[in-house]
Length: 174
Length: 282
Image (cartoon, rainbow over all chains, first blue to last red; front, side, top):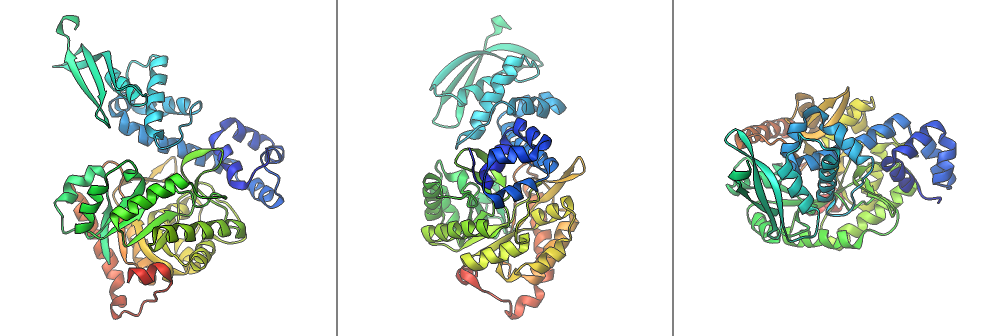
């Protein structure tokens, strides 16, 4: 659907596949995105490398915000944290006021699906809970007791925000 | 000239002690969209406040988002700031919410959009408005240069400029231009407030991570701006990796000294002051 310059730019920034097509065949992609002649010329002047940098910058800003909500997991993932996040970001784009919470919840689900053991289990539980609608949840989790990871019950509830949580250490399961 | 910080929850305990180093506070409107108005009423008893918006997306063609505008206005009512600010940028369109700031083309068409939205925002809030330059990896071209666009925008919307010194510096490095030459093209009499925070470098590109101490080149550029402009306030815009309060206080002191060194010629009051923002701010 033909649209204005900002809308076309926004679609390019969000969609890596569209950026790849823009790089390969700018004229055809611009025709697909908009019809206004003055906008067309301006969009054709956009540097594909700069477009990719701007798009990565947006993902890095998302990453920074999510890292505040998942600090232990991000620290544990270390240098690979951003590459995991980039994979997640390619398939999920948060919108609206709860975008950072939704992004963190979606990233937590992604890490769990991928079976990334370095992530902090209790933190992922809390992020997924915060991104949902439930008022209370009980999860089996792990916490560090002394120097050992132990099984624990994690009780999550809204109070009303942010999410509060209580851990019960279950020695018998440790 | 006042020197202060952007209000962040991580700094709340320090700010509550009313340290002498903090002369003013900038409130990010979106941080108070879900509540906290009583805190704003407390803060305004102690500090001059400015309300800064991130998500009004003034550069998007079409009407402003009424929900965001209403929330912004509510924060302004609670904070009763000296002035309000937003960015020369867009964050969303009717189809896509990008969530962060992106550049607009410096064209006559875009200028009209920005002017209309800036006037609407200032009128709605009943406060002087200043607009901020952003940092961007994208270098968009239009009929005007960026400083020409900003000068025209301030003149036509009758508003002031919030010059982000770090953004100017980063753009000049990433896009290979002279920041002082950029200032030569700008109507500096419109500058009311400055932002400054240290930059970082990643893969040979300069980045505004809002997490680093202010570097010497930035202080040099700040001096150059203050020498030219009737700056009323400088805000240290730290968002992450906060150092201890005494380190931040020292950084504010360095900024204040740099600004004061440049500000001496202004003590005779001969600086130009024009436009709605300056008129209200004086």
